[in-house]
Length: 31
Image (cartoon, rainbow, N blue to C red):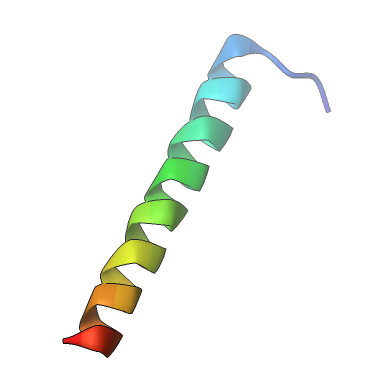
């Protein structure tokens, strides 16, 4: 698996999306 700029960008985007989903999930739990 080669780490081209596109692959790194997608991985970074996915991890950021996962963080936002986690944050939303925590907010829903504590509301």
